Image (cartoon, rainbow, N blue to C red):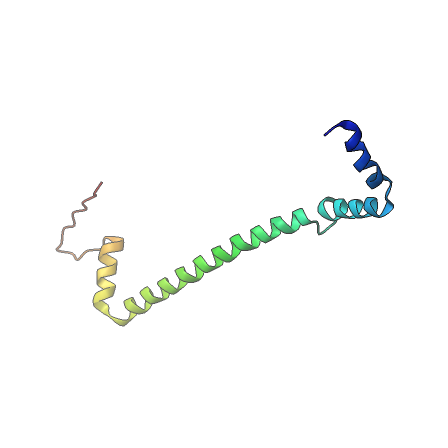
Length: 101
């Protein structure tokens, strides 16, 4: 496309006040406004991250509640948990910890 034909199409757009007003409005909304499109995009991404994090913590709370119910319902489960997680032992026992690689 030659320079003259490019100018032929651009010159009427630049002189059109409605086009300039629309262009100014789009630039203002995209960049300068308090609730600009860029900020809205960033906030939407942050909301999605927080929703995922919320769901993760809800699942973790449910798992912990199930474990707590299991531990409180049966004394044998409580003893097993204490031995496995906290390496507790009876007085006459010896514990060997084997670490697997």
